[in-house]
Length: 61
Image (tube, rainbow, N blue to C red; front, top):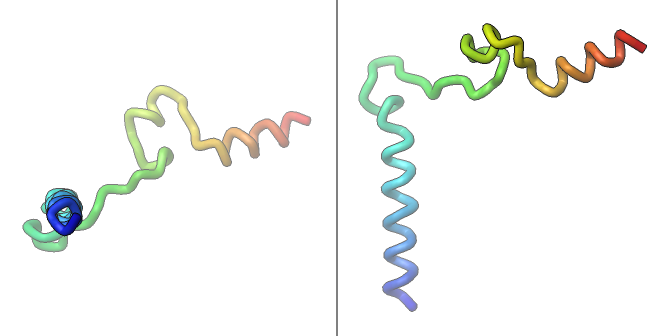
């Protein structure tokens, strides 16, 4: 039981370390924004976030 716990704790620690590489190694590094409105590719394709789509639908009524 302890072996499984330590193994899973090791996997979680490795995942957190790999996810934070950019923050730890780049001077002034930050996580990239995950918001749809900050993604240039999605903006070019005309894809909006659900809140913006809801606002647009409410204006049409």
